[in-house]
Length: 119
Image 1: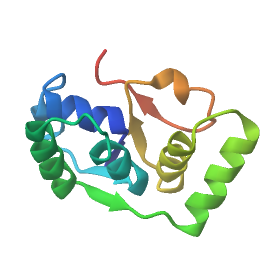
Image 2 (image 1 turned 90 degrees about the horizontal axis):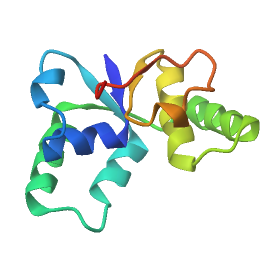
Image 3 (image 1 turned 180 degrees about the horizontal axis):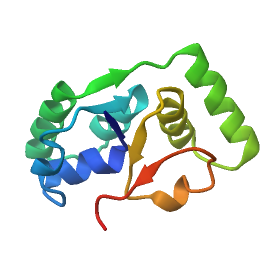
Image 4 (image 1 turned 90 degrees about the vertical axis):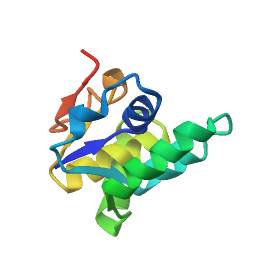
C-alpha cells in the first residue's frame, strides 16, 4: 500500500498521470488529503467526479493521536504546512511510501520513503 499526496490525486484526476499507474496498487490517503483535494475552489466538475471515484477506491488513514503527535514533532523540527505535516506523519506512522510531486517539501524528513511518479 502507498499513500498519495494531494497533488497525485489531482494529477490522476486531470490526466497528468495515467490512472493505470495505481491500478494494481492499494492506495491510501491521509484524511486531510481529501479535504485539500475536494475543497479546492476552482475544481472542475469532471475532476470532482474523478476525484470522488479515486477517493472511493482509496483507504482513508485516520487522524489518530499518534499521527497528530508525529505531525507536531515534524512541524517543531522544520517549517512545513499543516497539511504536509499530517500527510508525512500519516505515511510514517503507517510505515508506507509517500507518492508526491513535491518531493522537496518532504525530503528532509528522516525515514520517510518518497516517490515522485512524474519522473
